[in-house]
Length: 270
Image (cartoon, rainbow, N blue to C red; front, side, top):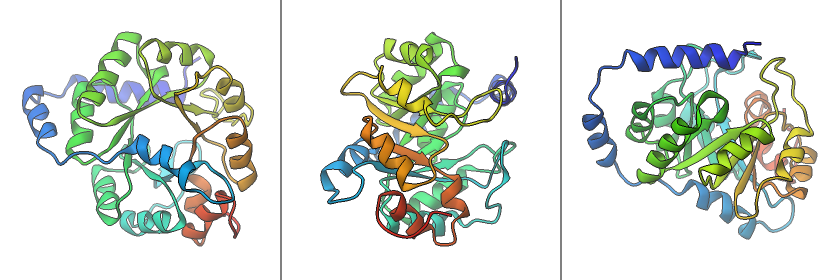
C-alpha cells in the first residue's frame, strides 16, 4: 500500500533528477560556510544540566502545516518562534523546509537560526547529495534521513557525507527492521517516529518498543505523538535522550511556557 511518504518522496526524487547544478560547486559552497553548531552535544548536555523535572532534551519544531493536520501556524514568524522555544528551554530546533507539502522554506531555517544560538535540524526529505550540501549552505547543523525513503547504499552514502560536513544525521526509523538497517551503517542518533505511514495514526507505545533494541551509546529521539509532560517523562524512563515536538507547541498560546511544561515545569501545553 502506498503511503503519504511515498508520494512526497517521489516528488523530491523527481526534483533531484532534474537538478543540473554541479555537485563540486555545491560542495565548495557547503565547505566554505561557518562551522555547524553541535546538535548531538546539545542533546547530551541537557541531561547534565537539568536540575529536577525531566532530564530529556526537547527538539522544538517550526512548521506551518502538515499533510495530516493541515494548517498549524501558516503565518508564523520563524525568528519569534525560535526565540520563544529557546527561552522555554529547548535544546535544539527542527525546521521544515519542504514547500509543497509543509509550506516551509530554507528562509524559515535561516531566520530561526539567526534569531538564537541553538543548533537547528533541517527537517526535509533528503534523497540526494545536493540536498545535503543545500542543508549546510542554508545553515543547518543537522539533517534528517528517513530510512523508509532510502535504500541501504543511499543511506550509507548520505550519512557519511553529513558527517564529513560536520553535521549530525538524525536517522528516522519506524520499526525494528528499519532500526537494524540504520545500525548497519553505524548511526549515532536515531529518531523513532510513532506515526503510522499508512493511517497517520500515532502509536504511543511504538517508541518504547523500538527503544529496547537501540544499543547503549546511540542517542534516541522520540518523534510524533508527544503532547504532555507525562509523555516526555514516560519516554525518558525507557531511555530516550530527547523528544521532537511540533504540533502542541505551535498551537500553544505561550510557546515558551509550553516547552517548559513539557520538561516538567509549569503551564499547560496547548
